[in-house]
Length: 251
Image 1 (cartoon, one colour):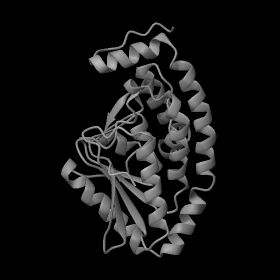
Image 2 (cartoon, one colour):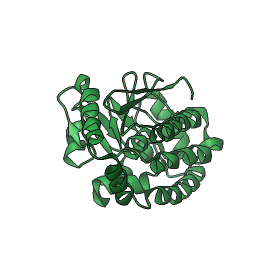
Image 3 (cartoon, helix red, strand yellow):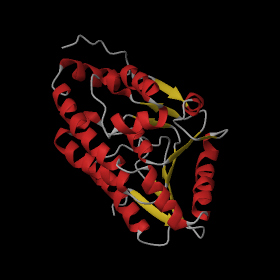
Image 4 (tube, helix red, strand yellow):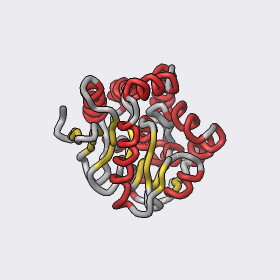
């Protein structure tokens, strides 16, 4: 396991899996693989539920698109599918922002806890890019097809209160400082239920999800590779790094 991911199991049989790449917690293949490895190791033991959280200001800002990750996208999505195949329930503690692929990571969890200061965005269209990480499947499954279409088409960023209103987060607490404790409490409630029953119910509820995500990521990756070669993508990344509005031309 890479040092950027730590695992701690409490007496209540809840495990905390934490990312350590502050402040933005950008992911790569190694980081997502380490999280998947942690899930698989935990499900083979006595752990009954997992809290996924991050050190620093933001939960996860996805991949750093300025670093040229095209060749590793396929490997990344292979690891992402492993997250969806995991057997234990996961509660994501969304402190700060879950942006782009970071939103996809949050949606790989069963539940999400946030505060009014939390931020969520599938900002790909604002970068001249196509979404990934299985958001084609996971986002509409949580918020419905209409809300998912708006978030994906517009790239709009929403706060915790709006996210809670549309079902993107399941519990809304008063402040950022309360998020992790609330996520742990939620996971402890799951851990207190009959573990064989919880796993069986979860397997039924999520039946076919990982396969749908795998199929979706194949299509998402193809569109990403196509759009990565456009002028709009170059403009979107440049505008984002310069913190200005993009000027897209459709080329």
